[in-house]
Amino acid sequence: MASNRFCITDVFAEGPYAGNQLATVFDAFAISSEEMQQIAREFNFSETTFVGGGSSDAGFDVRIFTPTTELPFAGHPTLGTAFLLRDAADGAAAVTLNLGVGKITVTFGDDGVLWMRQVAPDFRDEVAAADVAAELGIDVAGIRADAPCQIVSTGIPFLMVPLVSHAELVAARPGGGSLSEGLLVFAPDGYTADQQLGCRMFARELGVGEDPATGSANGCLAAYLRQHALLGDGPVDILVGQGYEIGRPSQLYLRARLATDGGLDVGEAFRVEVGGRTRLVAEGMLQR
Image 1: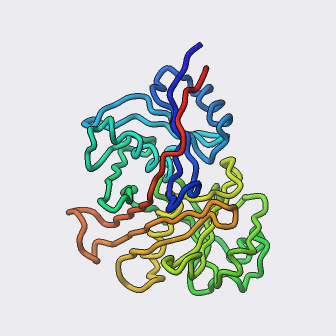
Image 2: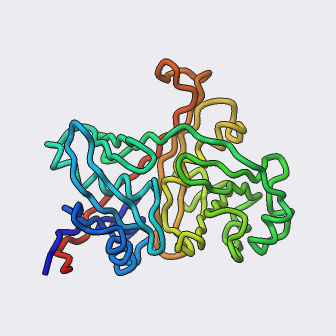
């Protein structure tokens, strides 16, 4: 019988037993894709990651699975896995993961916040507000009329839905999930005094009914907010709450800026960064 070390972390967690749970399996290069999917279903978290190998110089090879499918990128698995790999990188200030979307680098802030820079956003189709309202089971008046319902991707496409108030956010009850693989609804005012926005994310087609904290979707949100100047004509730098309705309070740190805002590398048109804190919860051996 083979065995592999695994860890469980809580990502985007400001306190114990909060945020989004992540299982990470190490030395996974000998595990088949089919067994990885079975293991992810066994843990049954939003995502499970498998570390195959790599180094601090070349980056670490990582695969990400939901309970039903493999993903090229996801936010909280990226941060949680990088958090665990920092020791393998000799405590470096940054760790690079080799993911399906390419290399993603995670940096470690002195304040305990981990930051990942996502790939440049892709702004896709807009969806009629009436169709979105029907999907969410809310009145169309609960969706902002001054901003589009739009699909945005930084590796995985999510439908951005701007709501008028926190009441609509709490009331949202998605139906079959036919409009997009993932649907992120957000509203003014967070769940704490520090948070500027509250959000929820539903991805039934990916095997995730409601996600406690979604770094990939919030990267799309940061880009969407800057693209449409919903928080003013300048860089985005905010805190967002998620997961409170399902008992997993999470806090995400969002940054986005255009080249016209300054501070970007030469040739870089759009920078999106998502951050959060991570806690180690448990570790053990997976028996296979």
